[in-house]
Image (cartoon, rainbow, N blue to C red; front, side, top):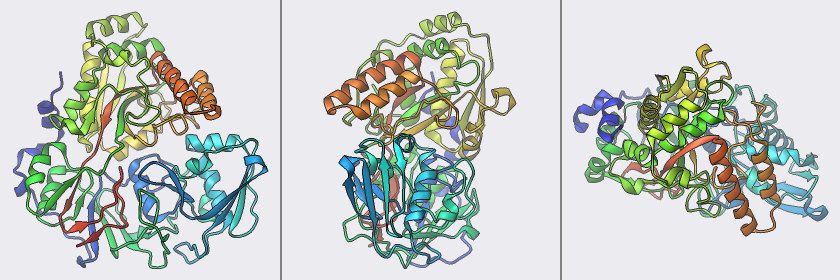
Length: 530
């Protein structure tokens, strides 16, 4: 069994060094003014296009430089952001949307309705909520520079929720890029400008305050509300070794470490000048994703065979040890603590664990000894720990595992490949999905099956998609919950992925920072230096 001790021993040799003796970070090219926020993100910003890739890093980057029509507040409710207001017409089938006055892109061009429509169309092809919206959209006519309509074939009450699902508004010339190609410009209308010329993947990214940005006259709340920026510059410093990042925080070389290594939390909690915060209240579901296109996990019997051996407690303890407030087990496919969470069929994961049964089911499944290419991120300690646990289980039950370690940026690039595992593709990887995304069927992982619409791994299940449609049309919350029960039971029959627990991320800052906006992602407005 993988333990916390062995998982950490495999993470990085740098952890053997005393934390206070970690090397000094290289000084940036530009001297640090007092109004510079020095931030260590969870990993490398490998690609800054938040539509082309679904990584949280690209999304966090997107929140800084692009604005959204609607935004999700701390209670997961959609609120107008770029929108001044909307009007429902035609018995709820037409949404007439009016933009706030004075919105401008970083190149000083006004934000127009045509930019919004092009951005919606690009984004919608890659997000589950957007795909659903497009399927019910008749047209999106531009009425004026500040007014456009979304005309639906039938009422769609979740439209603000859909557009708040990280639909970043870009200039039309950029938004016309295929959603399956990466953009080449990073021009937005948000509170920060991205200094692309100084972006060095694997090293640093620089953002400067957009002095022309006009925030809403509201208190910041999650991704919604007034985005008042109190720093002239925000520097993302990529520090793959989290022991080095923690040492830099203690020595005041950085101001904020997004995801400190869990094993170092006791030290950081007692360090002078450092605060550890628990801003993440929604958490994320940790999961093991499988490639459904190719052997061996195109075989549903093999996917089902591993279920008796999946021990959520083992996954969570390997990653987080005794920090029990940071994780939860007994987790299904919808976010625990939110309205659609279900216990239906959960005995598949909460009943007695039986590795011997899993081994017998693997033998009976028709598995032919195919090599399983397990991609494991070397720069994400928790996901690396998950990977080690699932590798050990597969070895125990007789599956031929090829454990391939790589940085997260490389993993993200490779997971898009639909090639055979032995030809540059993959079979399995571990990841997390934010609780707000998998809270209900509306934004959950699509399983439409054509490879372009589905999530990485490309599970196909028309029955599940039919249930999703029924959820949208349900009369009330009780009916929606009943459908979620059916969907979860279905998930433990077809096994699109393995949920292996829920985790809540702490963050660590210098105590000179104040007024951080609580969220499960870093928010760079509102925060200031005391």
